[in-house]
Length: 345
Ligand code: NAD
Image 1 (spheres, rainbow, N blue to C red):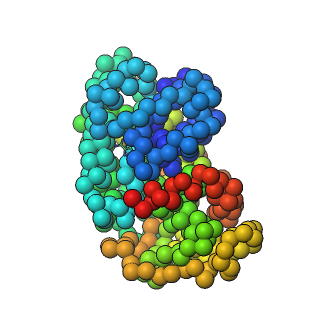
Image 2: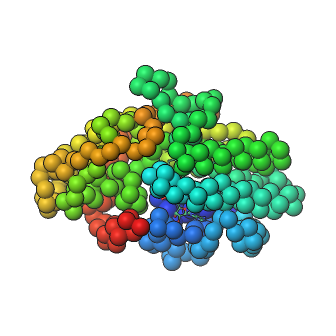
Image 3: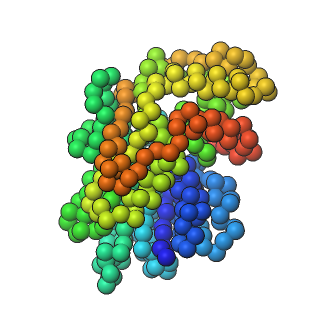
């Protein structure tokens, strides 16, 4: 039995991970800590929070060291997934400071708190701290460059990726200096249920359903490597249960697609399965807008290490995952409609 702390557990990946863990690890206790910023939503945890005494939700900030100290001790935490973060690149370009505060200082506070707590233990090898990071720390690839792997140097280009890179360096340093049992994951773009409507896939689906323009940066030729969120959760489970302390794992879907192709694919699928959206064909809504500042051209991940060492591979093809995601948004208007006003804040 494990007492697992998931920070950022009311966000997109954190809530998918919490729901996944609850279902697949029935003996474990889950302690979910989230500040509930605009991106956190308790509705994402509806299925687990009130249905079991195995799950505790705490509203709080990872920068609050006293709070973290008390949570670690009160719940005898043995394993931590750190997903609490500011995660949207556009917001980081407009207002970088909160990204440094949460992503860098917050990770520092967690590491400090976990280290002090862990040093008191007589069985230190039973503890784990898994820090969830992004492929964006490696920078941007050109069309024919090889995908990123764990050996690539860090070359972050946005305030968001710079803050994530900084936090990764802190985690690595806490392993090298103190042997804190940390592991880092660097994953490509996720998609799936509970994805906040500011991100490309949910934004596109919702704008089609509500008849609003679908904004696409620049020429739409930027390429991302998409992974269904549940496949990411399975990778994180293998990582935290492994003995690969001090290591990093690149995780990707090997599904490279340009933004414009992706948006057209979503338009075509919604035109086929929905009769109620206002503008048809929905690709009439596509609107090219001024490119994002410093827009990374391409991300691509080589997942050979996690495939070989932990026997992971994605189970959900992009074709299946994107249809399931669209279907989820079609069925869950009650979830996304109230978020549309938050998206403008
Ligand atoms: P998200 O923005 O949906 O969720 C982040 C959550 O963290 C929210 O619930 C928010 O309320 C919470 N939070 C923010 N500041 C906090 C603080 N100071 N203390 C406690 N909670 C706080 O983000 P996401 O997409 O779920 O990403 C989660 C993590 O995974 C991030 O670290 C991100 O860098 C990483 N990641 C995301 C992707 C992706 O495609 N979404 C890919 C790779 C890695």
